[in-house]
Length: 432
Image 1 (tube, rainbow, N blue to C red):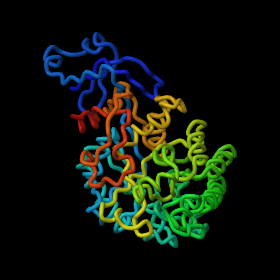
Image 2 (cartoon, rainbow, N blue to C red):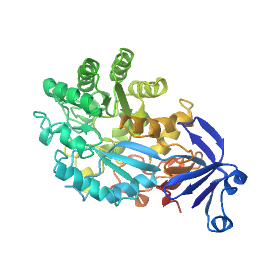
Image 3 (cartoon, rainbow, N blue to C red):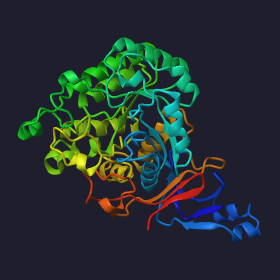
Image 4 (tube, rainbow, N blue to C red):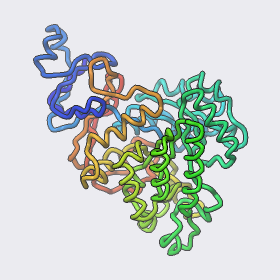
């Protein structure tokens, strides 16, 4: 049994924000309340054997849910594997991850899906796996969505590539609606991308690099919002980066589409100027854009247009990121800095409350992927994060639990130090 005392419990599900003690037993929360109330249920032997965490001055919250991560397993485990990715998640306060399907081979078969699921069972956090929308992620032929859903696919996505054939996507939406499973979409039309990973504009011109125009995102988002409205499918616009796209999503939500949108910490923290400072460590798809785009993403988070914060955790080797801009892969690691960046970029400036941040990082991603969101109530799963909201820490390359350290945030001093991550009632991460 684990007794967490004196903490400030912040729970978006119950809207509770205040001092409360929490007792876990096995994988569930056994009791909440004052010490007197909790101890009234315990035998003298149980009181004697309690493992105690004194959370004085710390926040106790439901474990985070990151519904957009890449663990490179199978196929590219020199970058990351399921166990090192899960360790990175635990270090960041994340107790559930949902893996994208663009592995090698891609997750378009039961065999590959079950490989990930079996390995995920040995991880310190909950690991769920999506399947691709199309066979081989080639955008031409749908996978057997019924079969993959039957075997536990969390949803469907060709993340990393857009689905250009709208007839294929229409059928995917129709089937997903029938299965009551979500579809998540990477929105970048290659017609408007001269060179990927950098916003097409002032910085790309300064670098002599073609860049990716925001129209690449906007045109796909507009099309897919129409299809979502038409079919009633539950659709997520992934890692939104353009002010125009935020407006489009807002409009179609108001029209009644079952639409959702993700924002990443790098898109609400950085602008295209980061590429000048951090080079390929700030190259990502879609790219970080202008300050106006960044502010629009923040506004979307504030007004509910964007309802999930995810990392798009995309580990790469140092050798790969050391290549010239045109040859380096896009993407950054994110699991170990996401909570801290949410506090720094959103809570501390007063854009949103800590309660709202936790809703965006835990409750809403869980709901979108058909899970019961974590809460701090009796009989709820004992999946928790304990952190110091204002406690500063420095991002250090050598301390990453991930195999990769391709982050522009190395060296940054951030608030929100994670002290403990608890999954299934076990401490899976504890800061030294």
